[in-house]
Structures are given as C-alpha cells and as structure tokens.
Amino acid sequence: MRAVAFFEYGPADVLRAIDVDPPVAGSGQVRVKVRAAGVQPFDTLVRRGWMPDAVPSMPATPGNEFAGVTDDGREVLGFTTLGCYAEYVVVPDDQVVPRPSNMPWEVAGGFSAAAQTSSIAMEQLGVGPGDVFLVHGASGSVGTVLTQLARLAGATVIGTASEANQEYVRMLGAIPVVYGDGLADRVRAITDSVTVSLDAGGHGSLDVSLELVKDRERITTIADFQRAPSLGVRMLRGERSAARLSKIVDLYAQGLLKVHLREVFPLEEAAAAHQTLESGHGRGKIVLRVA
Ligand SMILES: NC(=O)c1ccc[n+]([C@@H]2O[C@H](COP(=O)([O-])OP(=O)(O)OC[C@H]3O[C@@H](n4cnc5c(N)ncnc54)[C@H](OP(=O)(O)O)[C@@H]3O)[C@@H](O)[C@H]2O)c1
Image (cartoon, rainbow, N blue to C red):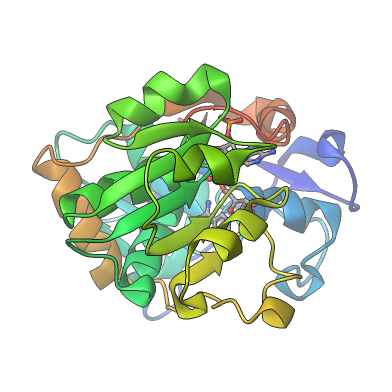
C-alpha cells in the first residue's frame, strides 16, 4: 500500500511517500481502508522528534485521525496515535464510530482530534450558560469546534484570531477580537466579566487569560504546556473515546456543528500539508485525501 513516512526526525520534507505491506487486523482490532486523514499539530511534533515515546521504530507514519471503510464494509471515522497517512490503518475496534451520511469523507477524516479535545475542554472547564468564555485561537481547528460547542452550551464566546479571520470567528458565533499586543484591553472594552478561558493560540495568550479570569481552575492551555504547571493553570486530562466522539458526530449529523476545511492535500503531498499547518495561521482543518 502507499503510505507517507519519515526515516529520520526533521523538517516537513523528511516525509516521503513509500510502498509498505498493509497492516493486518488482530483480535479486537479493525482494519480500515482510509479515504481521508486529518493533519494535526501533534503529527508535526512527532515528525520533529518531540514525542519520542510515540514513535516505536523508523520509518514511522504519522496521522492520528482518519475516516474510511472497514474490511466488513462499514463507513467509519476514528482515532489512533500514528499510522493514518496510509491506505490502510488498523485500530482497536472501540476507536471507530459510524460516519453520518451527511458528513463528507474529508470532514470525517479530520474530525476526531478537534472534536475530542474540544469535548474534553468543555467538560473539564465546566463551560455552560452564563459563562463568558475567552477562546484564544478561535479560528484554528480546535477553536472552530470549541467555539460552536460553547455556544450550543449557552455560553457567550469571545474568540481571538488574526485580522483576516475576524468574520470567520463571528460566523462561528463568537465575538471576534484580534490577538496580539493590547488584547486584554480590547477584551475589557467588550466585557469585564470573562469567567473561563482556553488558550489554543500560544504566543503569550495565556498571560491575557491570567489577567482576565479570576479562577485559575477555569483557565487551561493546549498550546503552552511548559508554562502551565508553574502558573497553577489546569491541564486537560480527559481520555479520547468512541462515546465522546459519537456525541460530537451527532451534533454534526443534526446540522448543529460546522467544520471548515482549510485545505485538502493528496496523500503524496503530506509534506506540503505539514508546511501549511506549521505556518501557524489559517481557518479550520487541513486534511489528506487518501483514496
Ligand atoms: N488539534 C488538537 O486536537 C490539539 C490537541 C492538543 C493540543 N493542540 C494544540 O493546540 C494548538 C492549536 O491547535 P489547532 O489544531 O487548532 O491549530 P491551528 O488550526 O493551526 O490553529 C492555530 C490558531 O492559533 C492562532 N494564532 C496564530 N498566531 C497567534 C498568536 N500570535 N496569538 C494568538 N493566536 C495565534 C491562529 O489564528 P489565525 O489563523 O487567525 O492567525 C489559529 O486560530 C496547537 O498548539 C496544538 O499543538 C491541538
């Protein structure tokens, strides 16, 4: 089968399309013929060698979310840690859920990670009616889903993004604000009662959360892990699961959640997809079309 792999850690161009033997499903596992796979910041960290525990051997194939057809003909989407930039992936059979008929393959392939991360964040931060939720990086793949989940839960969302993505963030249901110098004052001009915050933007966004949110238990970051512990900021600890994924998939199936595809690349152009993701800017999700 065709797969994309790296033989050494490094920049995006260490990714190469290769031919390898397809994996075989063992007991309790399911094999999926992949139609589309999401491209994740996690994959770029793996490729750079920052997650050595996640890479058992070289060559290694990145990709931790996918959609495709099981050997017994079920259309599914799912999650794992590595291996999805390939024509076939094998995962435990409790790591797939049915693909709704109104969910395009590319959306399905890039759905799991942002959905699960957003769901865990909503739960652990306890976001609900009456909250004013500051989401840093609301235009990104996680921010896109999280903003909508928070609106559905009855919260007011203030979402940060670049100038170019202000209208996009408004369309997601948030009050848009431009990130960068002076952000805290721009938020204060909207409200002085931010109750909860998630940082998906990095670049010092966390400091603004600390300035505006009284309760540190209601601040988290998924982009500034190194500073979080010393600042007394909560780390997200939830588990990914099929049950969690199903709940968010249902929202999509009902038309309550939208996913914006930033760009779809053919499998063979995974290196270009990584370069685009590593620009750090864009709207929504980058996906590889596999078949
Ligand atoms: N995807 C996941 O499930 C997951 C899970 C755990 C952790 N994370 C981490 O969470 C972060 C976001 O992931 P993602 O997949 O949403 O990435 P993404 O799609 O690349 O989005 C990046 C976001 O950061 C914003 N941003 C760029 N420069 C910024 C700055 N100087 N200040 C504030 N915000 C800035 C971007 O806004 P503009 O595009 O408008 O510039 C965009 O909204 C990454 O650090 C990632 O490693 C992600």
